[in-house]
Length: 364
Image 1 (cartoon, one colour):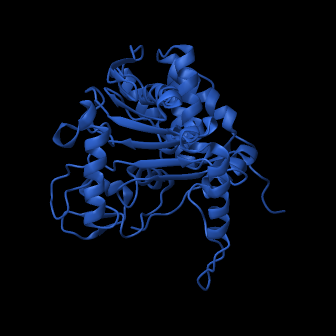
Image 2 (cartoon, rainbow, N blue to C red):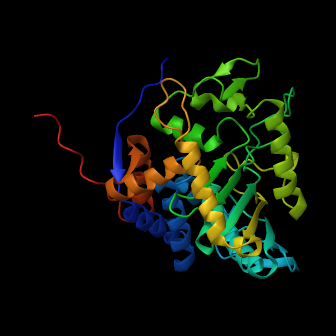
């Protein structure tokens, strides 16, 4: 049976923040923590990372209610030297744990020039680019690595899912141009995109997943019957392995068979691992010349000769930058099925429903 699309509604970014914060406060998060998580989740939607924003709220609520996340964690540094630290998240919300890690890395990079801070006992934290972007405001480069929260990929040529999507993100400051921001899974598509396709009632393109017979799998509601494919074949498999070792194993976080599928298990702590590497441009000749060089390269790439039929050459992060402007002005698009889920959640929690923008009038 073909999968058909569904109608789309829009919600203001500020309404998303208020709604998410209200839901998290109702289930016990302290006010400040609820506001911080809500801001990051809404920011994910505002930049078009719709597999990691408010779509995840019902899942987070369910996991917190089941006791799978600690709502009052003692997030603390457990290993530290001049240019590194390991942060134990005490099974707190991943958004809070990783934000703390980035803050520590920024401060350490001011004195050491570079800093690596890893996490353990963390949780799902949304899109990688949120954290790679944080150092940009300080004229610093951010490189982010994470172990995904469920194994969806096999070793190259294997049948057992022992690897996750293990994302990489980089935030590179520019001057007058938008920052260069790369955010990619080591699989062809992040699993959050599969969940978003399912919520919108859309099919996946061939090449995202295969079933256990090696045949293309395009129905996202059947995702449990197959596995995601790595980018670049065996090269993506190797990259996912290295990212997992650096972001997870290095800090004592879960990897391989130890990984807990947070889509299927609401109670068991995931022991998620992440890492942020921050580079202070002041230690490498200063921010101004570097940012000017980035601007020049960005313009060279954008203005370079294009193949027939190609209207524009995009730089990493430009389309998300455009979505932040458009969605900030016009509201964040939400599939009708997701809006219904959020309305049911609001009713169950006894909070105000998410405010939506009026639908435009139909044709006369």
